[in-house]
Length: 150
Image (cartoon, rainbow, N blue to C red; front, side, top):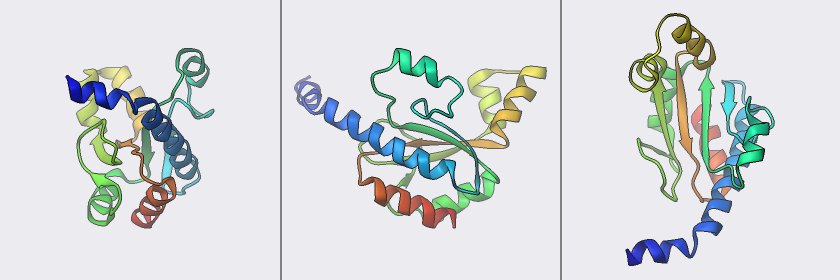
């Protein structure tokens, strides 16, 4: 319990760093030619941005994006990333990225069928990257993503 209490002392500063970095990473990803869509509630382009503005004081560091060729890019990221860890996890101070195939999301998370599954597939393509943006230097995160996307 004392570790939790100690961590709470820096929580506002860390959450601001997550949000600031997610804003910078989102701006980068939205202009990259290999990225079709980016989802971060703090971005004006997010379909529910206005709702997020009303409900949230901090938009967090969770960013999702849909690439042009997810399976190929997933392998590329796993091989090339240096600053961002290619790992399944959330909530660390370090940036973490993982690819989730759409079929897996439809079957396990949403249990969609028929038209609902087709509509989700239209949005998510063949899969989605989940990026938990950490508190490293934003320029370092972006440079790592850029070299791995190349």
